[in-house]
Image (cartoon, rainbow over the protein chains, first blue to last red):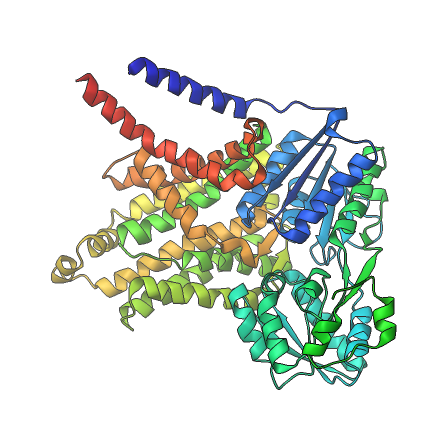
Length: 322
Length: 295
């Protein structure tokens, strides 16, 4: 019994000793972290991995790849940042604002490539979208909101009041709402806001807009995207056209979305990583926005929500969801 | 585990040591199950971040943050004492109210502090790396807070507060104003959490509305881990134990982050942490059983 127990204790110690062992440094290493696991953020990670593989950086050829998520917790994001700094990878990829801030606060020397940060300047990751001169560069997922307003006008030509459901606790959404408040009046429309602090509040927020708006536009707000079905229910029953910003929501019942393809954003991020692995300095690389936008339309949803899509719009779509 | 991970775990552990001290006061000393912490921790971070962002001295900003969180705790106490709302519900109400208040305070969900001066950059000694300096500064602060609390709970007021928590009826019959004691205790408890939040925002590059999620769970875990590895009825030991508990908890997370070599993946992190903490809690029990078998 005693012997058995001491063996077990020894095995436990060995496992802990293994965890304590210093990390081995390979020729090329990339460490990726994201604040939470989420379909869009995961496709960025996969995109980076794919871009690296296409350029010949694979685990089989000695690339050290590691991925950590903070499971939504900022204190864990801080600890992941410290771990990465200690591991001294060639490049750290930080996905979404809180993870990027934690990494940038933790190192001024290791190259950092942020991704899916809507406003990297407001988040103080870089001082402008020009080459930073520091160890930080990256790819923003900011959408040109002028194009979003154009899309709203194409789908609902006579709209005067546009509703937006968003989480006031999400930095990316607050940036979009502020900009829309300025932009919509220039196109003869006004913004009506409804906040949803939790995913379960999305349906109620959408219902509060019934009778007050001619269409509902949503950005890539995590809460709204997670609970998009509850928005679709309201849109279908009250005949309010829904326009989204991520193409997946069109398959779930939005009429149209002109959005960033997050997998492509990951590929684009990966290309920046490759430039740094090949010897470019991160401070010499300008921050980028997505170079590819995709238009998805759903004529069925349009019919349910009481509008007919113009043929020209359907023809210009990347994909028509049946 | 690299040296950066070790110093980082110590740094974040010490910050959460302050939370653990706050939780010790509410849950253990006052016997008040207080969830306000999930709101007062980010309130401290938000207040400090926005004040520093607008050019206030970081020490003054940290003091304001501590005060603001103390006030929040006092409101929870008031809801309970004067309005007779059940303690747990009073703290839940305050916690959800603080979410909106924190957004108002920051006027955005995220206030970065990457390029601004912080208490850590001001106190940074020449020739010492910042990742080493921060935990050392925090160590000095946490020890000072611990000693201050030890002193306080031996004074007349401190003893009256402990009596309020352990037997309110007896305390009242001795002429102690138990309502006032609850208000004061809740203020101190949440002030400590606010101080922790303010320091966390300054060491991690900014305040974020999501930084409070799960703070109470981590604080409670620290208290329980501390109590089971250093069991004692004496308060001076308890105040040390909960800080040690908070630091150990962070080391377990750092260990779990390095567990990939046994085939564990990023999403297993919380599970690994839970298993490590369970093992830590079971060891004293195993020891006891072994001793009994030997006898």
